[in-house]
Image (cartoon, one colour):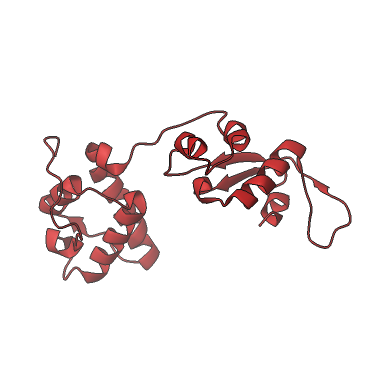
Amino acid sequence: KLGKFVEADGGTLFLDEVGELPLDMQVKLLRVLQEGEVDAVGSRRPTKIDVRIISATHRSLSEQVEAGEFRQDLFYRLNVIEMKMPSLREIPEDIPLMVSQVVERLARQSGAEPPVVSEEALLALRRYDFPGNVRELENILERALALCSDATVREGDLYLTQAAPKERAAA
């Protein structure tokens, strides 16, 4: 896994779900960040690297530090600039624009014309809680595009798995 650091030399490396790293990997990552070098497999000496790190997690790293599940020194190395990204459930007003962009991208990839997404479908998506966040939205729309019977995505095409969508005044 540390080979990705060598490939990213002079650039940026995105570490997704850094809060999931086991403690032994956290030690290795911390060493790479502190020393600016990696031990490449089969090499006799460390390789110097210059990499900018962007990391993401859905967990609270500060809570993990308190629980002893995440190294405090690594937390401070990674937490230089913190950006909190709201979940979809916190920004239902942005869902129609996101739906439009995802539907257009999926249609372009399949070589088809983008279908119309009905108002009822958009309202259902705005009310949905999205435990899987943006990835779940993309999966829902990909399935809906594959299963819709005509050029319109309706609420029934979404197959939302939540038993009772959260009601929102904003929707």
